[in-house]
Image (tube, rainbow, N blue to C red):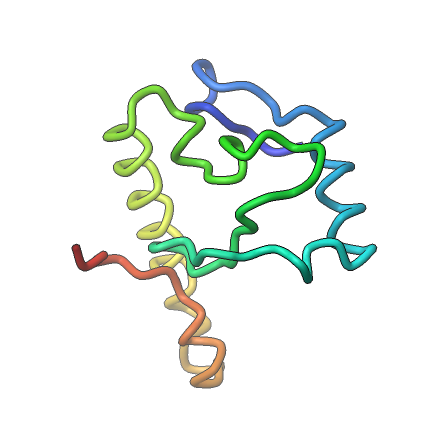
Length: 107
């Protein structure tokens, strides 16, 4: 039920049917049989395929017509996460800090 295809006003809500299908696949073990790739900024594992869900929507960048706008928005969001977490950094473990977004993506 997240937002996809662009920022608010240009994108749209993820179809509830796709969200339900992805959750069912995760809970039923179907995803243990697919390949994953890691998002370059946020480090989350993204399945390459989910039965019943169009592959192009699994990579959020693919849903944006303007790829540069996606890249800018993702980097901006990552910066906001990092900035907001600074107040908790002294209390966080190294493992938790290692999960922070990567602000500089190497080509």
